[in-house]
Image (cartoon, rainbow, N blue to C red; front, side, top):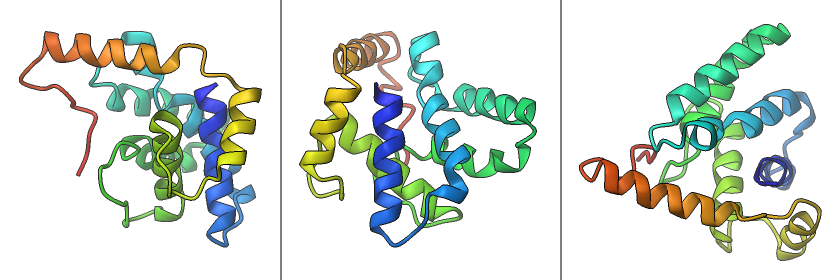
Length: 153
C-alpha cells in the first residue's frame, strides 16, 4: 500500500505545483516501488544505497537507464529533513513530501485529507507503520552510534 500511496501523492503534488507528472511517470513508479525495498527485504536502516542499486539495475533491464540519476536522487533524498532544492527538485521534493505525509500523516504538505483517506481505503496500511517502528527500534538497538543512517540534511 505504501508504494501506491506515495506514487499517487507524488503525482498529485506535481500537478498541484503546475507540473505534468506524465512524462516522468516511469521514474515516479520505479522510485516508489524501490525506495524502501531494502528496508523491507534486508530489514536494515542503511537501506538507501542498496535500494538505489536495485532500482538502477531494474531500469537498465527495462532499457530506461537514463532515468537512473533522477530515480536515484528521489530514493536517496526521500528522507531529507529539509526541502530538496537541487537537481531534479521537481521530482525529488514532491516524492519526499509524499513519503512524509504517508508515513506520518503530516498536514500542510499539499496532500488533502480526502485524497489520503481515499488512498488508504484503496491501499490499506496493513501494519506498515508498526513494521517501520519495530525495524527502527531494532536497528537503533543494534547500532546505537548510528540510529538513523537514512536521514539526510
